[in-house]
Amino acid sequence: MDLIRIIFAIILPPLGVFLQVGLGLHFWLNILLTICGYIPGIIHAVWIIARR
Image 1 (cartoon, rainbow, N blue to C red):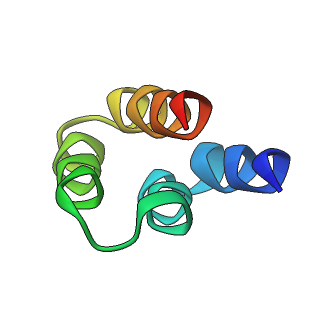
Image 2: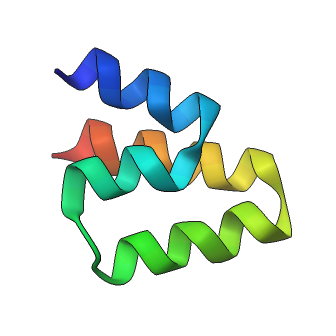
């Protein structure tokens, strides 16, 4: 299941975070990071998925 989340995190980072933690602080932070730059959003999403 983590592989699917990581694939979603690369394609659409907020979706990968949402599948891992739901509509919490990390989801909204990831949306902000993705708006500021696609790469920071990916890094944050993969970090959240790998950490849990």
